[in-house]
Length: 406
Ligand code: FAD
Image 1 (cartoon, protein in one colour):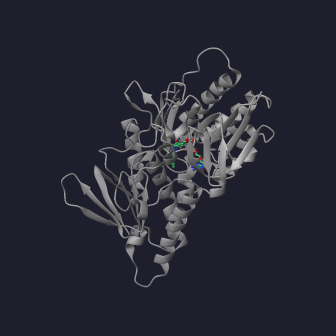
Image 2: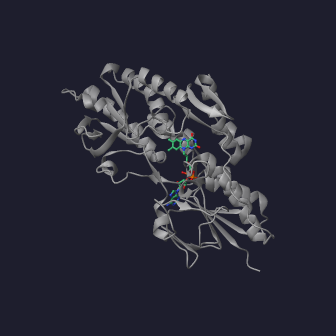
Image 3: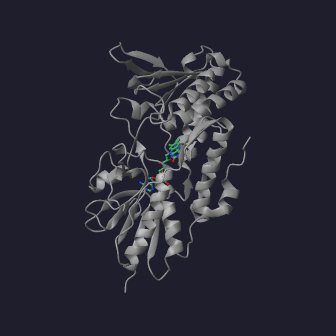
């Protein structure tokens, strides 16, 4: 009998969790497992704000996929996924096409610009390792140019972060530590630097405990961040951004660097494939399959799960992507083996959330307990290390883990 072929798209948190669980659970004779990813490495998306600010080298945030897959059980294809022909059970890659019996879509999310003019052209987004390197180098370049130009353009030293959600705040936490170093490196007066956080919503870190948010805002303000809350970015231009607060007149903020960190959507390949979606996210069935597609699982940032307590979608997180990977793998094993009974229902188990504010500060709620400062920062590093442990075991933690606890 022909073995079923499981194709997993994406070697992020969700994809690698699925593959590492499948390779343990299934024998070689039970199924062919194929993993497709753009690069031959995995990157820790949750660490990209550090590489973007330049507080962590970009090589620290990635590791070779070969470190965690068993090549005798998993075929790895380095390629870019372009489309899925669901009727023909085929994935179209930039290098050719492959067929599947079961598909796991785990290509992550993309930046959502909500149609704001100029953002795609003039703003950066913290989306992958190379984008992070580009942001770091761009900021460096602005400081170096300022230091050497005769007619100084102060706006080169202005940095705008669009969005006071998780990504925006974590990036700012790194930036306020990196900028003083840059000033020293390039002999620049720190007073000349302006760092803005522009947020359309009336609050910072929506959904977070208000006391913890206050802690984060006070800390970032003390280190020089100017918050513009309830202020919408209307346009990005080569010179900076245009903003408006309520009915007030539009204002311009000139800035050499604009980072857009305010929105996530699913992966565009979902839309191209014609699978029902909302902003490229698939409202999956309880067993993580796409409605109407019994052989396609969608996990991670391209999936949408409703938090019934508040009747709103869960925010896309690595925590959820990894938990989905485990359930997805177990459900695939059931399908491959034709085991009786229903597939497992996915229920997120939110153990806590920690938002870092630089290397040794953070805020968070873990197992219902509020934490700030070094304790929260310690927890954040433990969470980062746990993700490595879950996917690659203790050897990966030793190789890539964070142990700078003080
Ligand atoms: P990803 O981990 O993003 O992986 C997707 C993979 O697919 C990547 O390897 C990518 O290269 C590959 N890929 C994409 N497109 C293609 C293609 N067309 N062809 C082939 N391969 C492709 N979440 C938390 O839980 N805690 C945090 O503290 C946290 N902090 C964050 C900080 C930042 C700066 C950011 C940006 C996000 C943060 N998140 C955090 C969110 C978290 O990173 C995402 O929810 C998580 O990465 C989603 O996992 P995923 O498996 O869906 O996709």
